[in-house]
Image (tube, rainbow, N blue to C red; front, side, top):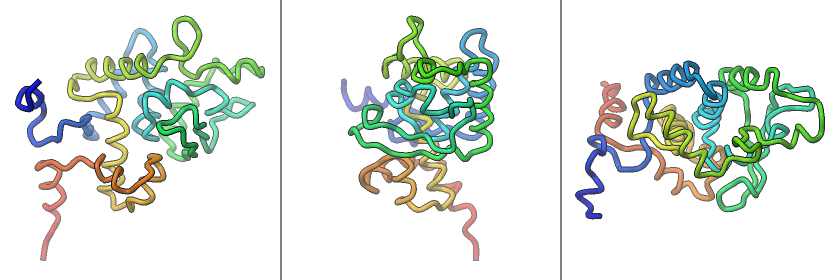
Length: 209
């Protein structure tokens, strides 16, 4: 495939990486998720963890109930991502402090949490056979959700890039963002921040003297 062909269909001014969602698009995805006839709660929870914590498809697919919920079914304050879950096999803690995210997760856990050791180790997002979804299946699940929302350019990485870009635009330092994202270097984090004419124009419109 030529460089020119790879660019076809790409939104003007973007880098070709996974699309960064606008706030309106994020709301649209949540609306579509809630309106689904099948797996509505799952779609909402998966997307919330993707855009709220920046989790990768592999990390989402690997989660167990006990990773996200306490023994009494309450949402944990911190989710500990085991080395087996992450890219590069590095553990990291993510803080579930966002009220909207906690609300979505609390709703997802209702009527599903069974007080047993076996249930606590069950997949958070099980496949039809009851096991863990594969990273590829999770990526496709998110991709289909974005298509239903009319955002063809979005992929399973869009939630992650949206979070990272949003934090950077709010002035959060790259070191903190790198820790949240689980990046080993700030340079990697900087590559995730979408730089396109529309975004740059929005940043500069507030410059005055």
